[in-house]
Image 1 (cartoon, rainbow, N blue to C red):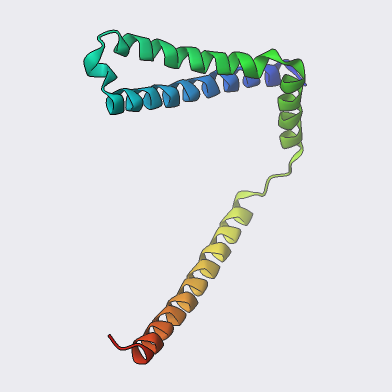
Image 2 (tube, rainbow, N blue to C red):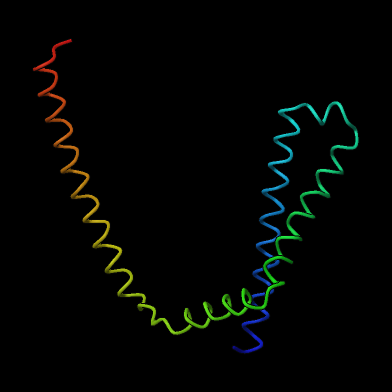
Length: 126
């Protein structure tokens, strides 16, 4: 693995830590609103911000600390680099095929749904 991959992995760890910190912030904020901590304690707002940052930062440290975990992530990046990705015209064709198949199946399911609805209304009148 090149230095580029390791640099990108560090950036990914930081991005992951920021996402975890945001989710922790929202979770702690929701708990504070639910239990009324924000109104009862004036120290709640700065403490919950700091706690969210600590949770996010410790997540990044935990992800980066173990060398085997780091090597696993770098190996995953190496495997993704080996993938032969489809070209844009192929992607467009496959997208159209998937959209057409989904539409056909939705029409079939709608027909069955309406038919069963009519049958059940006839058998079980309201």
